[in-house]
Image (tube, rainbow, N blue to C red):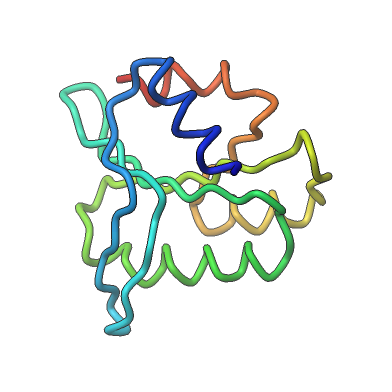
Length: 120
């Protein structure tokens, strides 16, 4: 359901995207991401994973998926994790781990603040 809320918000915010995208990673494994906002003149490709219940395991899975595809995407591609912080608390360790691997955590409660970055 959280993924549907994010999709509805992307539509309302007029953020162009492609849903349900799978990339083949360096490992040979397919890595699934919920949305990709294509590159524009102002911004690089933005790859988005939604995380309804942010846990250490889900953060680790996302970090692996990003590392696995990072080399096969354009060098300036960026990764984002949209985290449901309205229903579940997010530990600072999860945010820190995502940052360390160049994944920008975006708290759902602050989605209006991320709109400008995604609409470019």
